[in-house]
Image 1 (tube, rainbow, N blue to C red):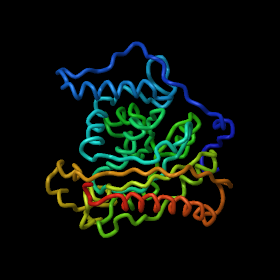
Image 2: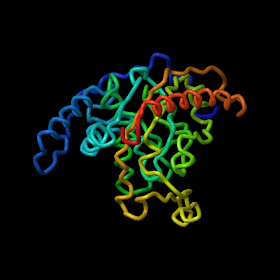
Image 3: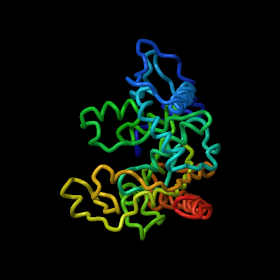
Image 4: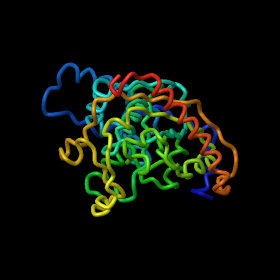
Length: 311
């Protein structure tokens, strides 16, 4: 099988129940008073976190190390960016079904994955019920001091097929960008041209009988438009790419800040596929093309709605 055998692990009636109150820990508070607007935002966030349908133990952790309250103070500024800086507009988020689901989206950004961050915030603050979307991290991330703990507490895991199957068995939502680095780093001339998709997500959907919700994201291509990709320079730093944008690397860390473009997230109807996860690549690629076509249409709808990068 492509990943762990799941027959007993994933059932068609896998449901999550709202998190129970935790004990033994108190949420971290900043050492300074927050402005009124931020206190109100914090209250909204806390109310959403309390409704997250993820199984937690009595100490506030799930089976994968997630602690919904751990990254709440990092989430607050992301919500501000979502609402006031990138001014994200969503359409069709009610189409995301309850229980296990794969959110499959186009990818862009060049410097920082604001598309992934905004998709996560949308599912947390606008989906009903609120969901924590699980990200699949690169293999080297758990080796980084401090970041490895933050990664687990925020809900991400190393992106192995085994971890994906286990998360889906617990009824979680997982976001996947099948273009990978090919989509994330590309010059502006290739904007909104879907790159080659990996096949793993479709094999995983077949193995676990998980619905796929296509997501078309508009705005990521303009947040940090690249005019060159110096792969040879990236290899010197152990990276497969090195984009040059109007601000990166010339402004240092400030180069990771996006332009204040308007993001649009369009969610499509759930797609269900039948077949064998061990089918030949050619058969899997035909199903992947169905997903790509759905994403292309959602992107086209988003592009048709906007008047400029910023509106």
